[in-house]
Image (cartoon, rainbow, N blue to C red; front, side, top):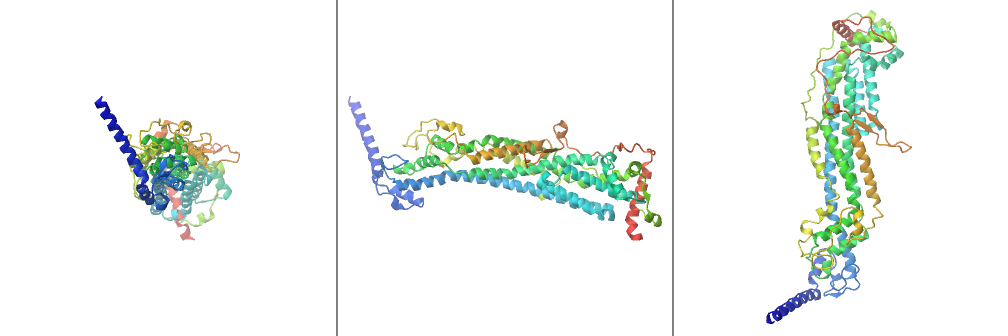
Length: 555
């Protein structure tokens, strides 16, 4: 009995002591005044001692160191403080992918420029004046490739551009190897119409078209994806907090001030419920965001392998030169087919009057391209290095939106265990932590969320991500989808090589041994002299080219 009496006395003294301490703090609001002033507010807003809090709208309405005016100012402060870590994380993400976009874009543009410079240098050395006099053809070729990289099919139809390039090159070379004849514009149009059937350049145009289409579609779509990421993050991060979110943030961060507990921090689960309520719409972005990142990662794999932009552009001078060599070696057969299909041309009067010929033929032979060679001349790096780096960043960015509450409600922002603010007092937070996303907020105990009104800005960005993901998947198959929809809203048009077969997983490089190609012109038929020796073909080609080179000096 005595023991029980002693315990009762002790408990009474403890409770009395605690209540006296809390009452003493409320009688003296000096700690609150100092903390409130440190936020940049006027210290005179804080009463010297506790007052009746019946007029407070957010915090507990008992004896308090807060006034209604303080509540309003601290509500604004809480909005700023709850938004700050989210803004910082968003800004870091934007910066990361803006930098990666700039790295890739600079690299691809420099590869294009380097390829043009390399071809010019090589062709000047190899073909001399014959190239210089026709250099504008190659200049326009690279200009068109650059426009296609920048603007896609809206600016350049890649298939048509490549067909025109080979037709124009055939026309120029056909005149050079048949300098003894005169050709009208109508005759040359006939030659151009049969470029694909003649196959004067062997299989090079077909292979190069497939390689260029896949590499350019993959490169420009991937760069567009890197452009889109910071844009989406920026727009989503600008979404304003709802009034109920601001109210809940104020209650979580600053209502402890009213009871004089300025150092008291929120319980972690309490913080999670508040942040999940405030970021409910952002969390709904996560599914399409992750789908988009998966598509970017898949396309990055293509860039490293069969759609390697670097492996296509670095040896393009060798590939075009190989096509020219094919035309040189097959010039007699090609000419005979053309003469049968388009008619026998008239002999050139200028050719008959100028017989002095000096052999200045082709002497160049060109190395086959090795797929193991990975140059590092563009932007001081290589595509492999860039993709390895960006894949790490893309993987790290997954689940960014759904994990924001956990990222924010950590470290010094929360208090562990039961020694924390639960919204009403310093005690354990008893409510269940609700899930992410708008639909789950119907049961949020701390933030009132209208689940029937999703945020318009975020819903529009979900649609943007979904559309970009479809472009990335198309590029993964080697297809280009126009970024502009047609007038009836039926969507973009697809074009390209298509790449659903297993062959897409293997780099395409030219064989060092050439297989003879039989030209096909249905209206022409087979040549009567099909067994002409290749030496005679080369000799005639060399004579014709020499005449073309010397013609300006013999007039």
